[in-house]
Amino acid sequence: MLHDASHYAPIGDKVILITGFDPFGGDSLNPSWLVAQALDGQRIAGHRVVAAQLPTVFGESLHQLRALATAHRPALTICLGQAGGRSALSLERVGININDARIPDNVGAQPIDTPVVPGGPAAYFASLPLKAMLRSVQQAGVPCEVSQTAGTFVCNHVLYGLMHMLQAQGVGPAGARGGFVHVPWLPGQGTPSLALRDMVRGIHAALWAAVLHQSDIALGAGATH
Ligand code: PCA
Image 1 (cartoon, helix red, strand yellow):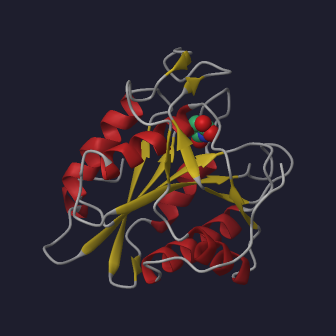
Image 2 (tube, protein in one colour):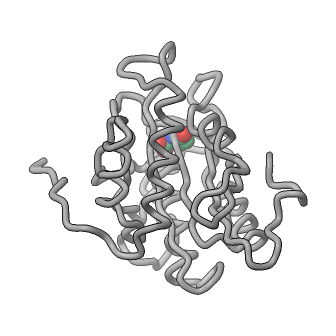
């Protein structure tokens, strides 16, 4: 974990919190954490990046995210996760209020059709300028897409829980924004894959765009299915 006291924000320094997950499902590494680590401490347009690892565990992942948000009060929170089988960085549009685990999480829990937040709304949109981020990542030469589903495992759980914290519970500073990006496998984990340096370059470009665009641009990136 990199969020020790030395990473706490001095007054006036805005924080970008970027998280990655520990390995899950039999993998020995998780590229989302390698990307987050690579960006830790970087300065982006007057913001400082703080990286932290979340466990691939229902419930506990959100407890830790809440503690991080309370400690660092990030202006921007972007959680990263691995999505094996995808070929591009996937900017997630929406988190839904459901846990439906196809495989057990890292403590063996496998919830089926339970809510992330009992009584919560069906879904929350990410509060990120997705199209501006898409353009920025593509201009950096890294494959990128807008995704309409973050699945129903721990990544969707974290995206929904993050947006519930920000939008319903007011955790963090006023105007704090957040969302989620899935990354492909690394070469050696499976096919298709993306090199770590490309993931890092792409996420860096996405963070730049997110900080610089308070509102989004109009750019077609929808899907028919
Ligand atoms: N990916 C999983 C959970 C942890 C991760 O990196 C998911 O997509 O839900």
